[in-house]
Image (cartoon, rainbow, N blue to C red; front, side, top):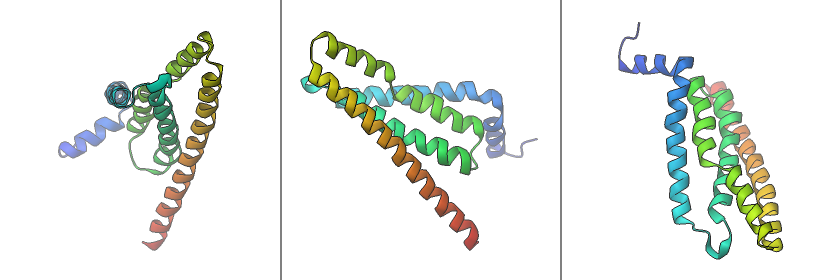
Length: 149
């Protein structure tokens, strides 16, 4: 039986049934952030800067979530899963990337298509790798703190 509001919240977050509302909440936040970024970075000159930026940042962040937070934090599993599925899932977009790429091909903008395809493949993989490196660094730091205690 929870002793106070904090304990009740912790118990609720640990409940596997809390995943659905958490995913919905995180999805709302991720989609809202993506919309804001789309407004801040309109496709000037026809190049989808916002889509590229969200996919790069999302790959970096998902690397940290999956490789550090999920494995080394004390956060409840449903909360961590909702960050990846809801927050990052709603924030990033392979569908927009695909439609934008197809549009470049249909318009005969082959250099722009190649640039976008190459930039997305290289930068998102590099971002995921950077997220892994940051997760590894955070893990080593946490281990050092444990040893010092």
